[in-house]
Length: 165
Image (tube, rainbow, N blue to C red; front, side, top):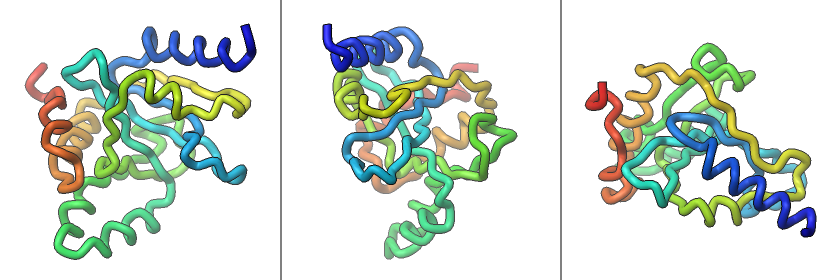
């Protein structure tokens, strides 16, 4: 079996067996093949589907991301509210203040995610289980629901964390 296929199988195993609840994924997306582009953290958001995953990118480019959405005309206020600011105390893997961009909530099949991952990177796909607080979970859910960009059918798949308590 080739290294490429072995790596893909390893990623598939991780997704099938370890990607659950709120957790971080770390990978480089093939859509951004620029060699300067480093992997990004994404947060997995549990949904009412076993066939799909919902991921939101996490970026430390806070000022750039806010400026991008601030120029969104009539939607600016709502898109800015769909950015969840976080720090090292909330997600220990992050070494600087960051934003979860809930406007970019991406609904993917597991197979689609596997095919998006750049396997040429040294460690192509890592999952970090993190103790995400109930408060942060609620903020993420609210931000996805607030976003005018995220389609309603995606919002309908959300598991409202406050309702499960």
